[in-house]
Image (cartoon, rainbow, N blue to C red; front, top):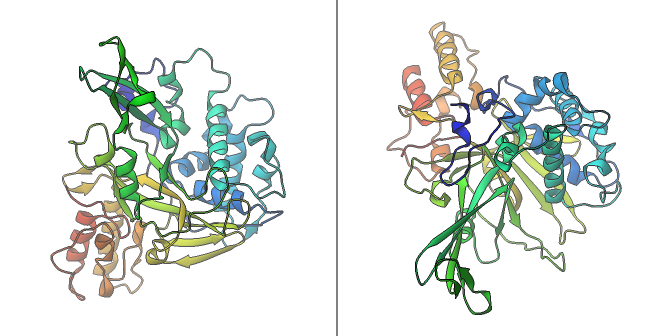
Length: 424
């Protein structure tokens, strides 16, 4: 059934599906190089860095590059989806250039009426407003939708998930569940040193007692209880905000919080006994400075060619994954890895690139593309470092002059460098 992708235990299925989930492509449909840099005009680094992260979100970019939205858009006047479509197409088709993101800047106050050109704004806040605006655009002209149906837009299917809040009575042990949609997960980092530790704290039960007791419908009185949040339905793209800014003072929590290139979300799900739920890092947004009222934003993104770039306003420079993983991140963007079937990613690109790789090798070509769709390293220097970034250790490295078939086996079994999917 079409709505199977939206069914989660305890939640009502949608009455209507607004965008077919089978039309969302998680892998890049074309091998795009890094696109244009963005001019910084009047403190727009917060906007530039968010736009770059969105531009290199594979399922969103695939949809916007197809121009499917503008062909069917019925909105009169301003439509943020049409603006984003125009921006992404311009950026990715302007590699090596610098452009002014006028398609978005010109409607900044329509995205959020409190945003003012020339003022330093918070990148996370702008991201939330931008995604909310795109969600509203997808719902424009549609009425009488239930909550589950609203989550079937292309935007909510990409960025959205659902949290489950379970309150368990300490007396009768009856559990009460409620569900809440989310587009990103904010993590408290004051007492932790890694994202996985922050996620563990996020799903840790909270005790409700004293003046914060819970009214149990079974006991018919106020009782002590435990409350726990878990991720009930995982998003296709996971956005994590590390809460670096103090709520009242705006001061910054300037500490190292470790994060990896590969993340398994399964331990933080309502159902923890399923298959691993792997995500691969594709963008990191960084704030440099001492408070949310000043400083500078820039980002690192993984382009459609599998290579990492530092994107700092107008500059777009190649970098490696080790540089990416050493940043004091503010926002982390992870995309769900392809499903594993028989220990291999399901994407047909692996097979197609592998065949081309072998054909070129057999022909003795010196022009064998060392990158592949995800950046496979040259055959004399194939590295296992990407497995180490996922806390895995292969039994031995590939011999430096092994045959192409060994490389092909390693590539298909372990997944692309920097996106190691691991094995359960």
